[in-house]
Image 1 (tube, each protein chain N blue to C red):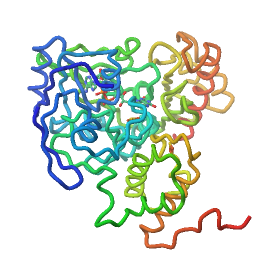
Image 2: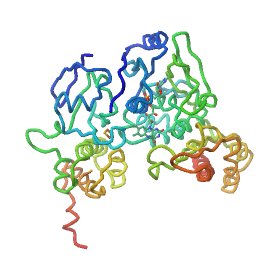
Image 3: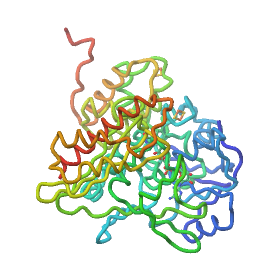
Amino acid sequence: MEITLKVNRREVSADVEPRTLLVHLLRERLRLTGTHVGCETGYCGACTVHVNGTAVKSCTMLAVQADGADITTIEGLASNGDLHPVQEGFWERHGLQCGYCTPGMIMSAVALLDANSNPSEDEIRHGLEGNLCRCTGYHNIVRAVEYAGAKMRGEEPPPPDWEVSA
Amino acid sequence: MFPRQFDYVAPTSLDEALQALADNPNAKVMSGGMSLIPLMKLRLFSPQLVVDIGRIPGLDGISDDGDHIAVGALVRHAQTASDPLVAANAAALAQAAAWTGDAQVRNRGTTCGALAHADIAADQPAGALACGATMVARSASGSREIAAADFFVDTLTSALNDDEILVEVRLPKAGAGEGSAYDKLGRRGGHSDYAVAGAAAWVRKANGTVAEARVALTGVGSKPTLAPAVAAAIVGTDGSADAVVAAAEHALEGVTVLEDLYGSEEYKAHLAKVYARRALTSALDAV
Ligand SMILES: Cc1cc2nc3c(=O)[nH]c(=O)nc-3n(C[C@H](O)[C@H](O)[C@H](O)COP(=O)(O)OP(=O)(O)OC[C@H]3O[C@@H](n4cnc5c(N)ncnc54)[C@H](O)[C@@H]3O)c2cc1C
Ligand code: FES
Ligand code: FES
């Protein structure tokens, strides 16, 4: 089936089987390999992208369902070489170790902050429930999102934990 | 991991979708795809034709239809969870939608899909049972209404025929003295993921007495089910904490408890009583 969609502000067309998953279209046909595949069962969230502005798991969506949709992947977040504040937050607050979960985690965090510009720690943890991380223990991911939220509100981010004396 | 080959249509009218189902006995409806796509990827289920109803206009709204609230087939969990009409008239369903899966699942999965799927541990069926919902099913040959109490037939089996689409779920408008609530233990702890066990309750109080009640359980047996003995035991009481504890003790009467990967029969039986008590308490508090 011939489909046309927007990916990271660029219009693309592709001929896909109905069973082609969105994540496979993105990674294997469009070579946007920043979107990862972890569990393939809908649980880990490594494959999270934005479809028409909301976070979805691209391993649990057919490419044909995305016909006509506006998709943003991790590759589409930075503009003119400037990192998105959430990407910057993960960098500044060590929100990753191996990095496998990171693209999906960042896409979920961006959607979370778009919906709620000043989330509590609890809201951040619950908002990221659909993304699993096997390395960080989540602590620095929460700090990264807090950093990004502050930046996006035009506030000074809280100092990193390692600079706060006991 | 991807599904076996299948044919796919995405009609842009309900009539076309119903005709596709009538013409193809091996067709399957897809709404949010949050349960169907994983099943197809695991190849536990391989329909010949997928009829994607996601592009049919007019099915994605929540409306006030006089004596009831209508939730359309394409209303996502996130929308059910945050809609003021649902919150005001069917709080148990709103709460169940808010605790269905995670943010990404709630952005795609639909309330009607969760009802049609009839998973033994799903959240929203319990809410629909307690709130006394009515399902509206359409096929090429007509339309019928199915009471929630008759809708959940068995494990992953609803009362829908293969050629029917659940076009909306109707929630009775809440009147004076009514309240409802849902509570669960999620498989990942807290409220996260499918219910190890959960319960929804709806009550109506009049003159300081519980006049009517419905309590529904999920996760404990072969299907989401009403627990009629709990409701019977709370009716006629003042709804005090003692009355609730006593009523919840009846949670297992007429209910089959089955063990699964997430809990033994004994544990599930215990949780059924705990969550029946918690849901009833919250429903009474909400009056
Ligand atoms: C990671 C993950 C976590 C989840 N956690 C939970 C949870 O905590 N609690 C919970 O309850 N559920 C959970 N789910 C399931 C989720 O709620 C699904 O959205 C829901 O079960 C199905 O809704 P859907 O719209 O996605 O339907 P689909 O997947 O499209 O369809 C499911 C089934 O229902 C049928 N169907 C769907 N819509 C209709 C209709 N309108 N008319 C007739 N038949 C229809 C389909 O033919 C199919 O058989 C989870 C799913 C995932 C992937
Ligand atoms: S790869 Fe999609 S949720 Fe894990
Ligand atoms: S950083 Fe390794 S899985 Fe999250």
